[in-house]
Image (cartoon, protein in one colour):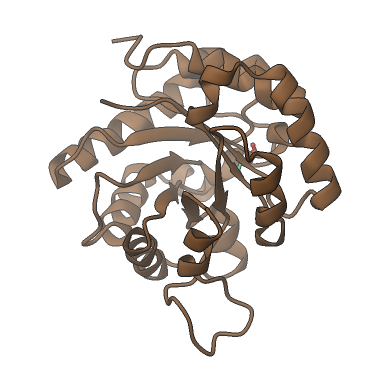
Length: 252
Ligand code: PGA
């Protein structure tokens, strides 16, 4: 049974104080029964603060990145084992900013996914094409390669996928519900061939309260990975309410 999920990617925003005040506001706005379907990914240095601020809730905390070793002489890296011990449930892998700015490849993503799963963290694996790739009709090819290579030997039952077309991230240009659905359906079919079509598939890229409803109505869109609009408790809670009240598969 697929799950509806809304995730907040805070990127390199919010200090500990801002983290605490966000949580105070969110708790006033959000019905308790929705908490278990929500993930928040803060900067790693704010994980502890966020865990404390959310202590009496069911909201899950994750990291935006981790290394593919548990410990060692890897200055500046984040250990997946330590993330688990700090109470993280999940880790983003292969976000397009990591791929574009920090040289992340499908191969390094695959190693991180395996190591995350070994440490009981659910990888939220991000895939998506650039504008150039879309314009030259390579979207499906790119998605297929990202999935095949990134998920090699991974446990498809302990995984979330976020489809985030690079041209829609932080640009204000959201994919139309039909474009997003087409990509999600392709990803779902690819995962089916690999053995599990029950993976939660989130859409990410300029999601806002105003566009979340139409996207959430699509059959293969199970939730969202939200950047900019997750930084304010009121817009984030609106997106949660729009999506988490719908039964999964509502449009089928
Ligand atoms: P955005 O970011 O919602 O600001 O476009 C999404 C993401 O980067 O995950």
